Every structure is written in C-alpha cells, then in structure tokens.
Image 1 (spheres, helix red, strand yellow):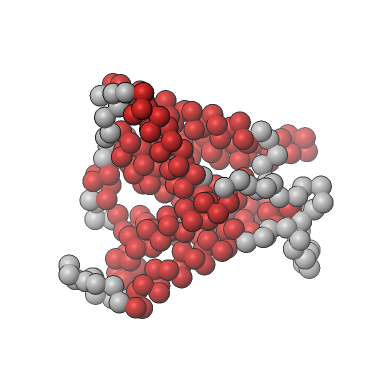
Image 2: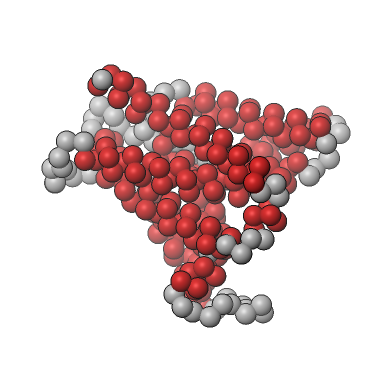
Length: 250
C-alpha cells in the first residue's frame, strides 16, 4: 500500500499535466471559439472563480510541498527558464485580474465600469500587486522551512489533494483560455507554405510554450522525480503536431 502511494505521488506531476491538457481540450468542444467563451455573460465570473481557486490551491499546497522539499532526501529540482516562467506567470495572472474586475465589482456591490473607463492609479496598483503577490506565493522558496508544528498523520496529504484538485480545475481553465484559444488559435491562423514557415512556427510555439503553457505548472516541476524533461518534450511535440495537423487539414 505504501509503495503504491509513493508511486502515485511520484507520478502526480505527469497525471496533472496530461489531465489539464485533456480537460482544456474538452472545453473546446463546448466553446469552439474564444468569442463563444469570452462573450458569455459569466465570463468575468469564470475568471474570478479560476483566480480564487488557483490562489487557494497554491496556498494549501505550500505547506505540505515545503515540508517534503525541506528534507535532504527530496531537494527541490532546479527548473530551467525560471526567469521566463516568472514573467509569463505574472503576465497571465495580470490578464486574469483585469478580466475578473467586473465580477469583483458586482460581488462587492460596486457599479459596473463605464464603456469609456480609463484605469486610474488605484486600479493600476491593484492590477500589478495582486498577480505579483500570487506569483511570489507560488515561486517563493519551498525548501529549508522550519517544521514548528506537528500535524496528525495523513492531514497534510488530505490538504494537498484538495489543493491539487483546485489547481487542476483552475489551470485547466487558464490553459484553455490562454493556450487553446489564445496561443494555438493564433498560430493556426498563420499560413504555413514553406519550410521557413514551419521553422517559425516551431520557434514561436517554443517561446509561447515557456511563457504561457509551463508557468502555471511550476509547483509540480520543482518536485518531479520522474523524467519530466522527456515528458515536457512529449507534450511539446504533441501540441506541435496538433497545430501542424490542423493547418494541413485547413
């Protein structure tokens, strides 16, 4: 039983990655275009809900993950392109914060923004600080934490499973919005007629992969003990083939 549990924890990052890809792809069946999703009356509430779920999941996962990574036997993995992941993460959450403002104002009993509204200093500060705080929460050092409090057996595992579910749901929504209907849709609209076009597609997709697809998975990268580099290459190859296949079909 203990061996099966350990195997499940070791394979959780891979399970998370592929489950997010599957769910975000399935969302495309319900919302074939970005307009179908962004044009709904509840779009801003979707964004606010996903932002709250993601932040809550990151908060809940912080303690059990830090406890594991503070052990000399399981140090955190060095993640490549860390600066780019930080930048991408902040930009993604900045966009989500802006898109969720109408829902926040509605829940707070504030009047909706006028059509000709221009952000003032307070709004700009709010836009910057909220995603900056969440980015700090996710990317701050997880190792070398002091173990002051003792918890009942299995308590932190249960907390982390709740965190994983919240992160899975929120990252799936973000992946659908920014990757499926954002980055991939933009690349699919390009004409690919020459070898140079294919190379451009490959390079541009690789850049977007680092800035858009990978940042929200950071909490799983730093403890992944499997061959995560190979899995990320498989994921990238799968996504590249999807784009090329749809371009050829089109």
